[in-house]
Length: 386
Image 1: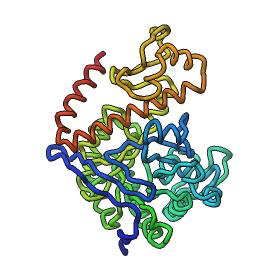
Image 2: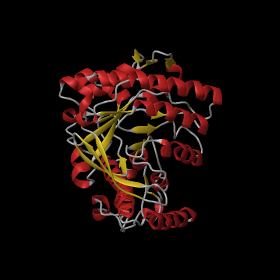
Image 3: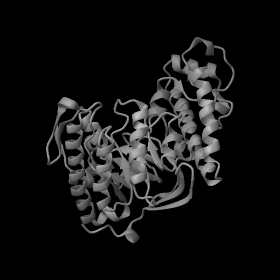
Image 4: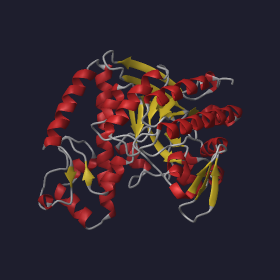
């Protein structure tokens, strides 16, 4: 299979520093819609919006350089053909910076009884109205090209936990074959040269299958690689273990993306395994539910102890929410089900995640990452005990 012409692609990865003790990397990911400092946490904008936030919030308040959108949801509504007619996803959602889209595979496989897997792809029924649709390795590439995504994902099969070794092996082999078909189709599409398509390492919680999957996918010589099939109900230490198995086997000069992770205390652990990119709905979803992350530990804002608490949510946080409002006011908004609460809470939680990543990056550039990691883990341990 011919390799993509790198000099024609808009995506380029530049490593600026590597921690010799852990393998953590700081780099620059150049895309057609701007340069992203790595390691990076990507806010999730499932349906073309990060719930509760406007693009102005994301750019002016948070300086987010890249967000993730979901192929499954946008395919069903409003549809990739309509988005393409309207100028692509960047124009449609008025987002001038980079966009990563997943293939929709995770969402399709979560439908369980509403889908049927074959060698050709996945036949599924919409959760909106029950209409049948088919995702194939080729069609999911076409959908993401219609969006105009900067980084796209191949169609993969994502198994629930636990799975038998036999089932995981069969699924992994199918994922590899789908990746080969999808990548060949991507290379045939001239429109694909402005973006990159990442294959996804699968293999459930079996190290031998993860290694075998990496070995097969390396033959594609892709511009970057993702590690999927985590955060599917497995113990968190298993997620770290599978990342530790797969990440070092991936090309050192290309970006590595772990999909769907993680909690704040997990972010530096993934970076320590050599991961450059992460995403998760957790900061925005938890924010809407009144669960807030702070430098002093978690805050469950509905608790009565915040009824007359005039202090900021997090005195160490520079976000608009913490600089302007008290815990008492935020609790009032939450209890009254005011829409403003979702905006203020999401703004803070994503700021918290992005600040952790910025601290990690700075510590790698200054050759202080192991010391930073020890201090961070000690602080997290104290907060957990409290």
